[in-house]
Every structure is written in structure tokens, then in C-alpha cells.
Image (cartoon, rainbow, N blue to C red; front, side, top):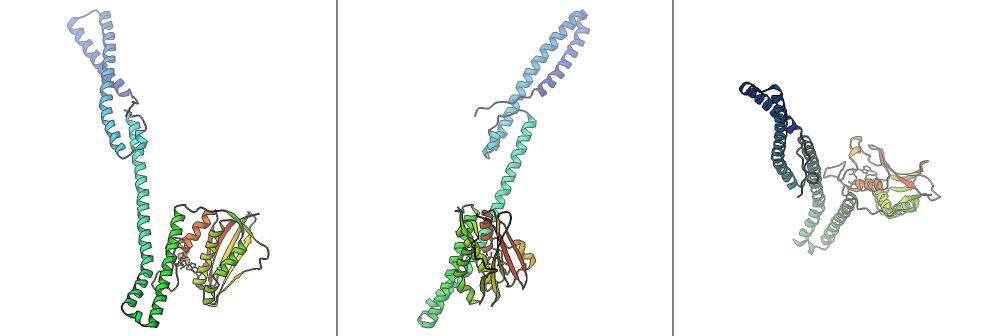
Length: 351
Ligand code: ADP
């Protein structure tokens, strides 16, 4: 490693001055009393002596200090470069203590920040793993339970066999949903979304989501409709498939947490700033105020009890938020317990 010094001479200058002062004083007084010299000769002698002593002590001190500090500083640099202190080793080694202190301080602060980030990431990873295994456990044990019961003899009973296989199939279906959501959230969180922007009619996309969810809504006798008649297309700019996923998640939630014989209404407003607001409204169970700020967190659920009859992976709304934010849009919730909820998001209007 080629090393260059940043020199500071202050220390050597001061030390050489003290030595010269003392040396000249001492020699001057001594010569005065012992040799009784001529005053002019003594002055010339002292000037020459002072000059030589000053230069000599300055050079010796500067050299010795540099060697001394250099060795120790180099050791510090070597130690921190062992920790891959790229910021430090890329700079010349210094014997200037102020700079060194600043550099080491900066190095320590950078390392501290790096450690904090790693800690947060580790915490996130641990929490994520815990949540994933918790989500997978319930359906997995359900499927395992039915299969074991079938193997233990229930498969000989024709009606039980069908019933248990159907239940096991439901569990597998739920596992598939969870894995699909996990796959989506990990892609979203890695910024791996690969949006393909297009112009499309949001009214038409909503209608196809209604068609896909018709059976689901009929089971609870919930009517899916528009709040108005949208005879003209409303063209927006975005990734059609991802926006369809957003609408699906919101409408599925509106059905899941909606009341029997209720309704889900979708509406659109065209704003003057070139945006379109899409609103998904239901008259279901609603959400208490204290839960609203955390609703879009991964795995966050209002009803955490096992008594939950409805519910997916707890990732639906965080997926929605990620997709909308990747479109530079905003998502908003208004809800009143036992009255209903309205989720709305913005999209860019296409000409
Ligand atoms: P989940 O898979 O549990 O539905 P989501 O992320 O989609 O997860 O939703 C998070 C929570 O938000 C749900 O558990 C539910 O309590 C609440 N929630 C979402 N949408 C609605 C809604 N339309 N009405 C009432 N509560 C809702």
C-alpha cells in the first residue's frame, strides 16, 4: 500500500522553539560567566547557535514524531481496514490528529448507522418469517388433519371420504392463495414489480372484476354495482393487470367484511389535476378508528382471534398499497364501525 503523509509542523515548531530558547539561554549565561566573552562575539555566536539548534531540533522532532505517529496511525488504519473501512483506506494516512479524529469519528458513525440498518433488517426478516410460518401453519395442519383421519379409516366411509377431501382441498386452496400473496409481496418489496404501463378503461376493468367475483358475492347475496351509469369509458394510465388486482383485493374485502344482503359500490371521480379517483364502498362491518393507521401493514388484521370466519393472508391491503404507490398514486380509507367502509385510490388519467 503506498502511503502519503499529510504533515503538520506545529508540534515540531513549538518544541524546537522551546529547546532553542532553553539552549540559547543556558549556553549564553554559561559562556558569559565562564569565558567572559566580548559582547558582540557572544551575540553572533548565540545567533548562529540558536539558528543551528532550532533547525536541528525541528528536523529531529519532526522526523521522530512522524515515524512515531505514523506507526501508530498506520496500525489504526490497518485495524479499521480489516473492517473494510473503504472510506478510510482510500485516503492518505495523516499525522494530523484533528483530521484523524474526524475520520475515525465519521467511520464510527457510518458503522453505527450500518449496524442499525442491519438490525432493522434482521428484525424485519425475523418478523416476516414468524408471520409466514404462522399463516401457513393453520391451513397446513387442517389439510394434514383430514388426510390423517382419512388414512386412519375414514376413507372407507364414502360420504366422509368426499367431505374430508373437499375440506382438505379448501385448505390447499388457502395455502395457494397465501403463497401467491407472499410471492407478490416479496416482489413488491424488492422493487421487482416490472410495471407495464398502458392506457385502459377503468370502468371496463371494474366490470370484469365484478363478473369474476359474482359467485362469491352471490353467496352472501351482496350486490356489486357502480354508483352511477358510466356510459363513456374513463381512460387511465397504469399496469392493467396490477390495477385489476387492486380492485379485486378491495372488492373481495368489501364482500368478505360486508353484511349479508348488502352492497358493494364502485365509483369514479375525474379531478382537475389529471387524476381519477376510484372508490370502493361497502355497507359492511366497518373498521374501528384505532386500526385504520395500521391497516396497510403486512399481516395486519383487525380481528386476530381464531374465531375469524373470513380472511386471507393479511397481505391484501399491503399489496394494494404497494401497487398504488408504484403508480405514484395515493390510497385512502374512510370507515365507520357497523356502517361501512370506503377505500379510494388515485390513478393517472389518460387523454
Ligand atoms: P385479510 O387477508 O385479513 O383480508 P387485508 O390486508 O386484505 O387482509 O385486510 C386487513 C384487515 O383490514 C382485514 O383483516 C380486515 O379486518 C380489515 N378490512 C379490510 N377491508 C375491509 C372492509 N372493506 N371492511 C372492513 N374491514 C376491512
